[in-house]
Amino acid sequence: MASRRLTTVCEVILLVVFSLLAIVPAQPQMDAKDHEQEPVFRSPFALKLHVDNEHYYEQKFDRVPYVADGDVYLFVGEAFGINVTVNGDRLSRITYQPDLVKADVEFKFTQEKSPDGFMMLLVTRNKLKRKLFCDALMTVPGKPEISKTSVLPVESNLSNFESWPHPIVQLVLRSFRFSESESQ
Image 1 (cartoon, one colour):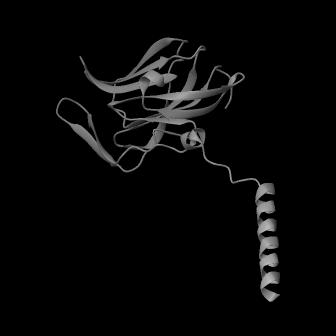
Image 2 (spheres, one colour; image 1 turned 180 degrees about the horizontal axis):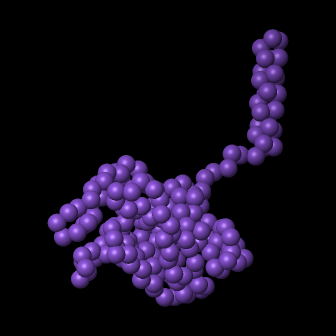
Image 3 (cartoon, rainbow, N blue to C red; image 1 turned 90 degrees about the vertical axis):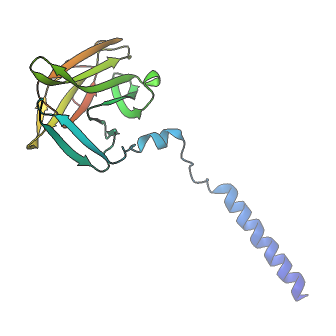
């Protein structure tokens, strides 16, 4: 008799547990979009820039994201892109895209030989259907502070070429938008 009661109690407990499982929603699974929000980091690297024909600037970097919180971080020798999510007239999310063919916007950042020494060159290709604006910051060798710099807006389905006559350690593009006056 005690054995029969124990079996009945176990059956009731199992019934209650299964009923609760049916009512309680499952934990949400992370999908590919959730993973895109996590920054992708470069492997540690040593940056080497020409200062002039005879001198170089070198700096080691640990982990620096390609894209984080809407900012795009560029170092010399890199070519990658971003994908954007557009909600209405605003860019709501920017994610790193290593495959230039799949990117909405492509970046290529190089240091080139010029008649006066060396220059930095940023090529931006906008594959979006609207003109793209952004702000820019940079760091340069020997100066710890961050400086503002300007970049021109890039027309839809065109490329833009920006150059600087001095080495740039890191270039950061931010506040991507479709209007010059729009605030982020």
